[in-house]
Length: 228
Image (cartoon, rainbow, N blue to C red; front, side, top):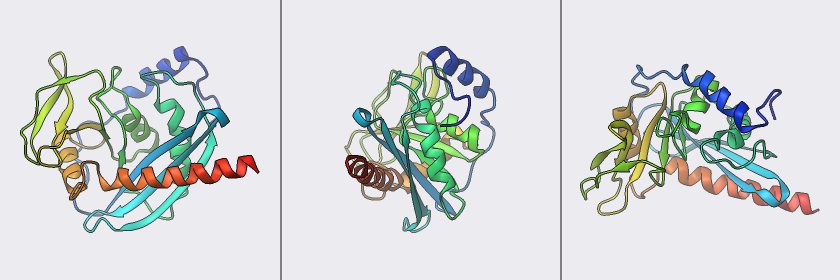
């Protein structure tokens, strides 16, 4: 756990308030289908106070795995809705730091600006690392949206009142959408294009699917070692 990591909700919200102003929203980000793209995800064992993170680097053009890394640590913050990044960021950063190559664009299984305080995991991780980041979530959190068109590529604004905080995006024909938001140094249109490039066969991005499987494996190994 980093030194001076927040220990209370009040401290965590103060950190969000401080870092939120550093989010860069006026860069388009890397072109979809070029360079590298990295998925990050975490798995928990609350009973044993363990969290495992995975970072999986893909070639953006072929979606083949280039590199991967995991990290296991203690859970660094209690479960509080809206403050989940404080449980995940330290171990996710350790996994990213363990990669043998630059990660390129980072895709988080969660939210960026689509967050009550406009500072979800993707934004938080982006500001701390300086990397371009986006969030691709499985549900809309507390936000509203119209149903996007039924075919792949259909989208609809994800709204907090009248403010657009992301988009509901259909990645498979007639399958429920995912929810895309900007994290750091990427435009929303580009975030949508990246998400479609990463979903040639399934609803969720390949980055998320592979990172999810890898962090679960890492947690299983850590639990086995803990029991020994």
